[in-house]
Length: 263
Image (cartoon, rainbow, N blue to C red; front, side, top):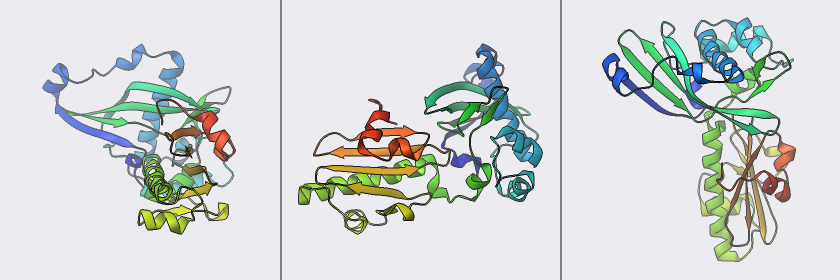
């Protein structure tokens, strides 16, 4: 598993001279609030701890899970690739926070400096974070994340939802109803990872439920966020997201989490 699976969207390199003229300066995180600084340090420390395979440090950065103890993390750390060198200096810049349910989702730039070169990694999303009353932690089960297939990434499940949406719209145009099975949708768009039974929903798959004039599509990303799409008649799709399945499990629930700007 690669940290880049957490929707890394840009990776660019510059020389030290170029960084002085065009790139962000290290130390920009001093402009953050106290909470933002703490979250930035948490991100930086996670990359270092994974690179150095420090299972106890990684364990302390996540909300506790009985099925993911330090020994469980130690088994998985050699399989996780951070995309940065252990010898590099790291600093989070351009940190953006967004409330999703009871957690806070992250987007940020990670600047890696090694010798005379500088690399910038841009993450649109990352593990969500929560404040437990004493410190900020990542709100995810890192063991489950390390075990999940690549299709379960946030960007991957959103792409799968959009492909399912295309199939649903095609079916509706032909049949004037959304009463389709998963097989009907696969006939419209081949290769869909879509199911129409709750018990078949696993990471990387989209759950499809529908009526005559309504359709709901749900899938979970690697960060723990649940994404959904609602179609009503031939209208404009609504795109929602939340921190729990229950919040998006119905058409009205998904609509209540929808944003005018989409995901």
